Image (cartoon, rainbow, N blue to C red; front, side, top):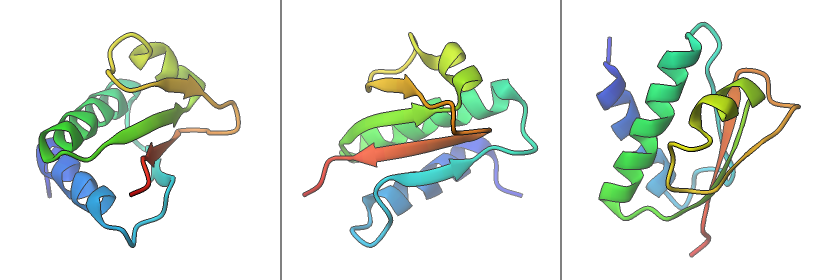
Length: 92
């Protein structure tokens, strides 16, 4: 089973593809709030390292509370998201 670092690299790789959806949906059902927060932070870091420009993230409200001050990209809560995140990247 892949660890969080490998999972984050895989998600960043998918985000780099022009064929992936924008926004890119992620679901964290079955993971703790802290595990989800850690993974989101790793994804943002991997995207930064790879030069993938993220426009914003829309987060589950509970996840937003944990990550609001910890990410370098704009974030906002979306009360329709239950255990999910939408990652928006800048269009080329």
